[in-house]
Image (tube, rainbow, N blue to C red):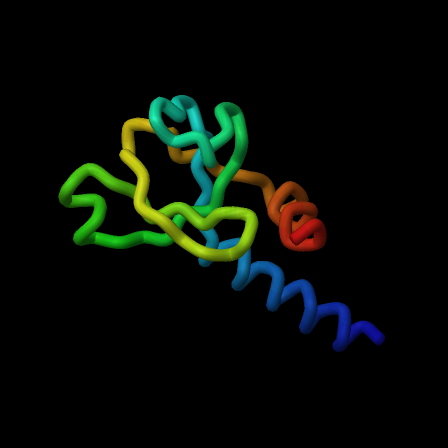
Length: 87
């Protein structure tokens, strides 16, 4: 059982290291965004060069939104695990 648990812990650490999160602080003209909500974002150099972030919504699809509408945050492993379980 210990090896299986260690496997899952290692996999969770990999997921935590890969995922990036932002907090929505503005939603002007973007009715599908909710202020004070945490969103996953996908790094996209081309989008970021033009001032946008690629944000993943509740359906799992990603869309571009103004980068100024978000602040980057770091979540604890426990918070990320809770988000992943709830997804």
